Length: 111
Length: 113
Image 1 (spheres, rainbow over the protein chains, first blue to last red):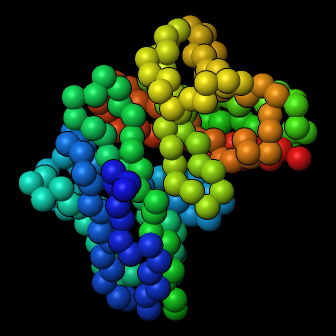
Image 2 (image 1 turned 135 degrees about the vertical axis):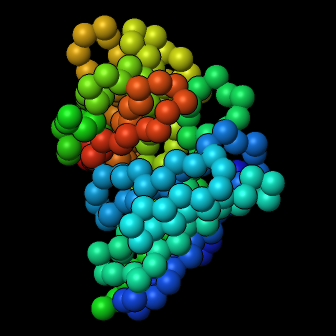
């Protein structure tokens, strides 16, 4: 079983829809990251959070440490949001800052 | 402030050759991480370096792979005697301090023929 699980693996939405991507993890963490990767492209860090909620434009990330769960929400989705969204965690107490990644959620937003 | 730079962006090597991947961290960042993304798989940690030191290489294959981050110049990920299974995207990330957010480079896509 992976230490970081994401759902769904694939998601197709119509433009304007509200989108939720979920991430569950099984280890104690000091921080959780949400990343975005376009096909064949680089990786952009969207959020790093250790508690509560963060918002940036149409993107909202929440985390529940007790339940070991995080969600990434996209409001008023747009075709340019089409990408792979990756959840990654940093284990607590580790001597390094290495990240453990989920397998990603492939999002396609259709016009 | 330029972002994390990686070169080359694409690298083709024949089996048995050496591959050298370079990563220049963001200005002021002294912590560098290398990750590998195999085709159809997720990202996996390889190695974490600070200037002149390897801090954690628990994700590095035991043979043929090495990494360095010298006092001057970029970090280098070196793969000797490449095999087809080394074909992947290799991403570098950097951070100013150990626990800070990591900033990713555009990646180097290695193809072994």
